[in-house]
Length: 158
Image (cartoon, rainbow, N blue to C red):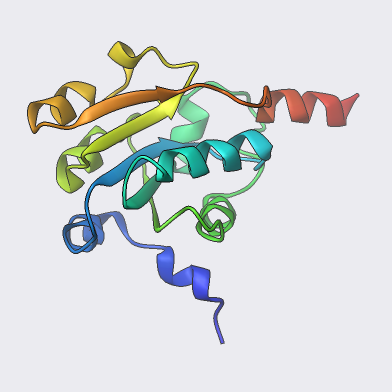
């Protein structure tokens, strides 16, 4: 028997249909989520609190490599990263994107709330203009815990 959280994993091609049936407002965020830490789970809980449902889109392995995070990233493959994020209580659905940005996915699912971490100025968040165009809002959630996967990997190596 498969764990219940696996029902939260959806193909990008079905994201529009799945999200159309969700209770609104829909919150959308994206990221690598390579090695989960307290900062990630707190951020996702804060994101969920901004709406009724939370969709998380995760960069594919190829997309992560193009971000320039280092030759050994991601540490965890996409399937593992998706499963860990889906297992979190705050998350309703998880999908992925292979492009450099999730803009096409954002345009498909049309969230009312678009969020990123506090290191992103709101005006630079991909999809913000589109979300504002259909009456939504874009929010940069301030960090509560100064954690990063890059920093964690660095500490492990020392």
